[in-house]
Image 1 (tube, rainbow, N blue to C red):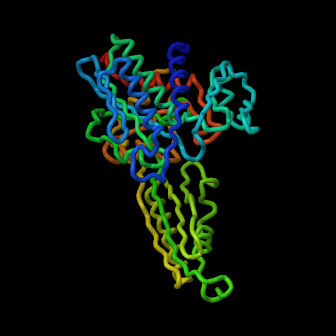
Image 2: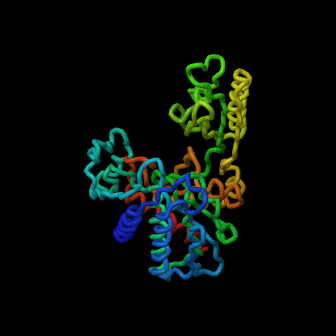
Image 3: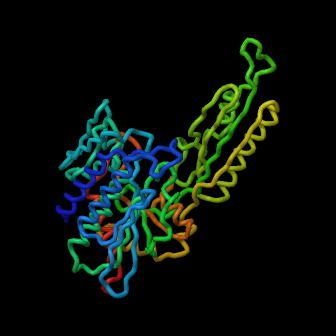
Amino acid sequence: MADKKIQKELIDRFCRYVRVETTSDDTVKDKCPTTDGQLELINMVAAELKEMGVPDVSVGSNGYLRAFIPGNVKRKKVFGFISHADTSPEVSGKDVKPVIHEKYDGKPIKLKDNLVLSPEEYPLLAQYKGKTVITSDGSTLLGADDKAGIAEIVTAASYFMTHPDVKRNSMEIFITPDEEIGQGTDHFPLESIKAKYLYTVDGDTEGCIESECFNAYSAKLTIKGVSIHPGSAKGKMVNASLLGARFLSMLPETEMPETTEGREGFFCPVSITGSIEECQVSLILRDFDSSGMERRIKTVEQIAESLKKTFPKASFELEIAHSYSNMSEYIDKDKKCLSYLEKAVEKTGIKPVHKLIRGGTDGSRLSELGHPCPNIFTGGQNFHGRLEWVAVPAMERACQVIINLVCTGVDQ
């Protein structure tokens, strides 16, 4: 049965959080967080935790929030939970206006600019007929990624602070900035982590557990051509932008994000900028298997080398950089972290569903740094777009999973 008090807390917190503009900015290189709104939200959450009586709350100089709620049993474990404050720069997160659809009628939801969120196109929506779902008004994204996760963690903390007699282990909380631009762990206070069992709360579909993600690399190709007046360019000009376009055209069309799914990896061009004289092409490479990633890196290198031989007057400089590894390699070394999560989901009355992350989380990098970190669902859907939505019953279940984890083994 739904807990109306927890649902009300979740709705109130979530709607307050999404109204704060926290879009991260990958063009900012000299500060963290990259945008002021992220720090505004992080400080808001810190104040809220302090007000509810959490004894240990701090925000570091780089905007990372850490909070700690001591357990009240003798043999305490420490369970940690992480969510990120920023939203994707792909769609505006300014002036978000959350729309609460109580007792959703199961029909298409009409948003601004003739956008329609339809259960025919998004069947999962139909499962929440008669329940409460939240969307934006259609002019912005919603921000469920990952303010739903923050709301769920803070509401779980509130539960423990208002139920001091409930037997519990210790609970550690981290809120990070700039996850959406791949910088969420750049300044993570690793030395302060007390949790042996660490989880990101940054997933989507209710009941889903994610413990496997892509291996991730980035590639940047800088091409320098020869600029000559177009009127006398024959045999002399080497158009760097044209060579950048040719490079992209030589990538396998069947191995792009829009043509792959499941365990299939991809090449993804993310930008091409420049002029006749110089052009830069950026792309990301993703694959679940290390051998597949090696093939993708080799493919990019071979295409660049082929162009270099064909156009000797141009120069080609290729930079390949590692972003994160498949977290399963590290989570598989300690099965307890995942086992506790599976049992916590089962305790809510549903069977956990294991799902691949066709992307990454802060937990991807933290796992690689020695802190295995599976991902817990939040109940949100259609992240990074104006059709984003979240189901409140799924948020409540995610909150209950967090509570169940913190209470793991206390009766043993």
